[in-house]
Length: 202
Image (tube, rainbow, N blue to C red; front, side, top):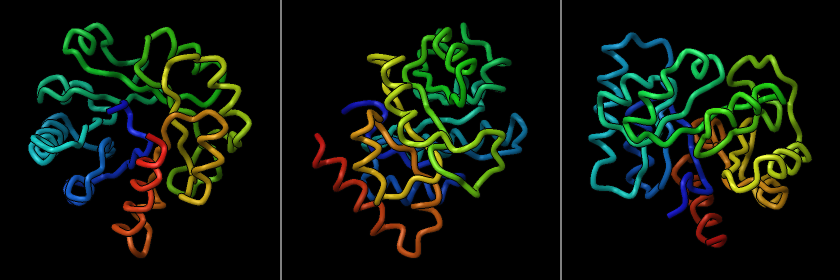
């Protein structure tokens, strides 16, 4: 299976990790904020226990030390975390690394770290977190993909299932989805829609 999968939900709790794993999701990012080192290690360890022996690949957001100690295989860093992370230790632990980008300088910093994928966002306006950056828009996906070549490109930010075809057509390899799942009145049905779309594209 490709990494990351075409449908790439981002969630903030073990309950969501368990729910998505049960539904057959292939790549799940755990993005839990404001945890100290011991809390981070606990949640990462618990999430890995949930996904063990399943098709789900667990991507740890931010907490690279916990990811290393717990034996995770996948890590995602924002730019601030990238600046502070020990990339040598991350690589020595065999972690595959994804990195967020929002502008040219951030893309340059990300490519220097030789990531396994690059994320571009926010594609659309998002209410989930206050962003310093204006929405990138779909044409930026095509531009970014040309610049990064064979590195997988993940589009994120305000994306709904109805946008998916257009975003894949613009050059994205994967779509990271937050509110379209977690705030959906029927999350399970929405996840199945996304998984159906991913299967069609294989």
